[in-house]
Length: 346
Image (cartoon, rainbow, N blue to C red; front, side, top):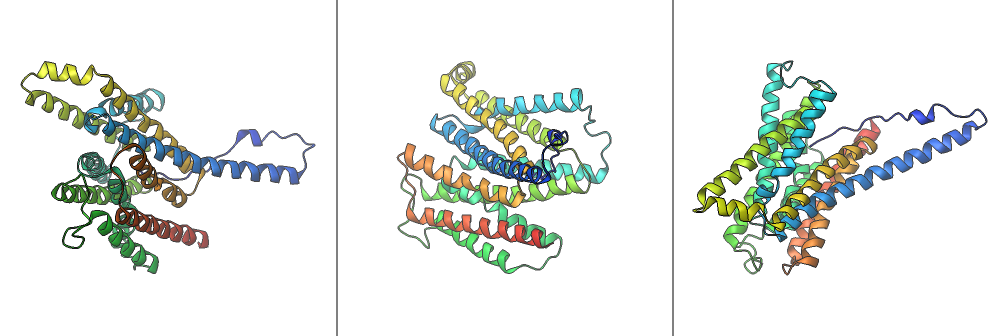
């Protein structure tokens, strides 16, 4: 989910001994700021590593991601409900305006379908290709926002769009262009299905980011409320998915027992709980570093997925896929740095 950087005030900087000089205070403050900024980048890297590793481990254990994610979304929903009702005493929807509720619905729809599409897409695509196409979200977000606010496209946006489209083509490797570049272990028809699912996921995530920003800036909605509705919807979707799978099997009880009472399912569920830790870390990262920098760091998901696949599986990335990933990474870098430079000038 999209977040905003916040100003952090350190109470331990207030009570300083009078013998410390002003120069020492300045040096101390600057060193703390430097440490905080590096910690923000470290948190973002660790968050990306947790998310990518959990998805990779679940696939290697041959457990459906939607089944393994049930406990992750259950604990996320319960913890947020306790936080909102018992600690902060927030009301869920009683004080929200009609326009805000519509935006919340739009946000909930696109956030849940975006993440579901990503998890389903992993059934058809290798993780590096899926992650690369998912991160085209950064470019689509800029394009959609420019269309909504009627902004003229900048040179950096046009260049990033070109690199993104070229990168997706290199990753997708359609047969009518690359007749000899089909991936070894994935049939071309499945690959095309996966490409379209991943593209929908990236566009849906872009709409989610824009609606999330509207909720936080315009309506002053609580971030915890947005995360709560996202978590509870996905919990019920994953639960229904499991129930349907159990119902479709002739021996439902035996199927459920073999699935849940199995160390591989337990391991996959525990791996998916790492995503909760990643969510906490990315919130901390946004508090310590500029969002454009965090966006660049988060795209390390692509690099992590390439490393994991090529080291721990027999499926190796071909040069064309790697080149496509580099192009998408370049477009993310161009967009993020241009936004950073624009804000610095302002």
